[in-house]
Length: 611
Image (tube, rainbow, N blue to C red; front, side):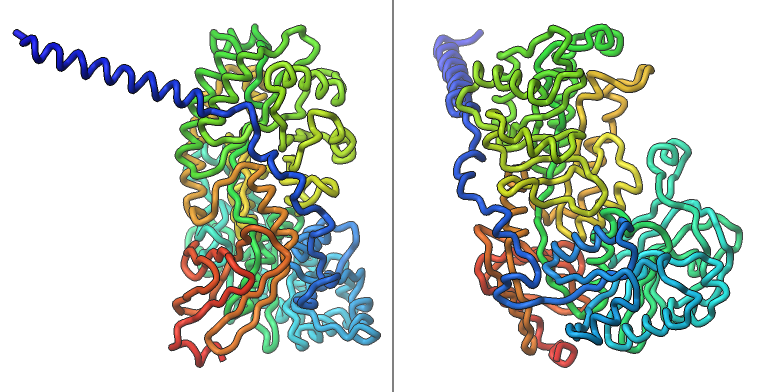
């Protein structure tokens, strides 16, 4: 039997707990200022395109280095190399031929290039002067990157070219590999085998280029990626090379047996190759890891018949009860920053209008999770973009009149159209545009004088081997990743089957954790936070000097904080003054520059190497 004293004690405790829980809920509601976008504050003071650094123009430190591109103007590799040089703050020269490049040196410029990227399919390999000129470049200390290779028949009959490329012969003109092996120590993220373990993984993941010539490499070369051959007695040391390096007396020759330089992979390959040529390399990075939920939430009831067939519930209940919990699980496990690009409606012609209470509900949820709410430009009906945006503006003005959007997802809209509608009232405070990757290597930059652009790169629902390789490349070059999940396809699925969100998203949380765990040193950001970092990255100037065991990093023309990667080919300890140092992986450090002058001190026992 409970005593009267214990009864009153228990009652008081229950009442206290009740009020505590009630108070915490009320406090959370009161403190949740979802009606104001914090990223809109001070956006007028952000740096703009005029402050972006252009190598060789207005630099207080002078030219940092020169890159040469030799090849056809229409080759997509040219644009990738141009963007890489811009990101690395390097000067770049374009030549359509070797003769033109020779004229740069012999005429008025007298330039010595750090690296030359060569579109080898445009060169005349029947002309003896071609290889002679390339050898001259190498003898001058210019590292050469063959962005592709001439036809295998050209290489097969040219022994001198083989020697130059580090090739000892042609085993097969074409071979089909079972997968690819990326060796550690080249791209960030370490060693990786792109080989499926079963038929299901093969179908879902394997999309790498698996057919190529099988070259045998000479002694002294170094392989960075090779094919995997399922052949009895095959020696893995002689597997067909995809990316390798030949060592010459005065320079390195890097070779790519494939088309990897034609897309954003080229950014990381060039950064990795540049780092392989030096005892250490320091270069700027963005340091941003974004998880962007595209077209979420939808605020109108849509595609009712299909939603009932697949889920036995309405579209709003699917988004709230099924999609949201899975997104939160993936987000909280990943370490990414979260941004949701709201699509008030998908179809503007079906008569179903967005509901104000749903907008308030999701804005509260996003604010509680420190996530950013942006606006999506998606429209599946024939409604014009301007009309769509004005309909969206009516909803926002009724529901959240003080809220100012600072990020906009452009869907598949052309950039000219985007620039035109940025003057619409609802987009007047936009500071960054999120767009799909167009494949030219310009994944960050300026959309207009005031507005930046940033690309989403990896499909969180369909993470394939080529996406993993591409992700490693971009992390290597920029310390940047942007994973997207497009929720519109849940409400308007493209297939006629019964595949549901549960089935297509079952690996989302696991992939985000597993495939990005090697990049934990980089920061999770929302897209507007990423925008600030992009502006600083594009504006900064820097210079690296060394004296003995001290490396001086001088930085200027930036606001707030900027980051650099230090990649070392030395076995040494590092100390830092004027910033913070965080290990990314063995021999790779993330530098957070807190001052304009950062000094790195390497352990004394390596002075003989450094000097």
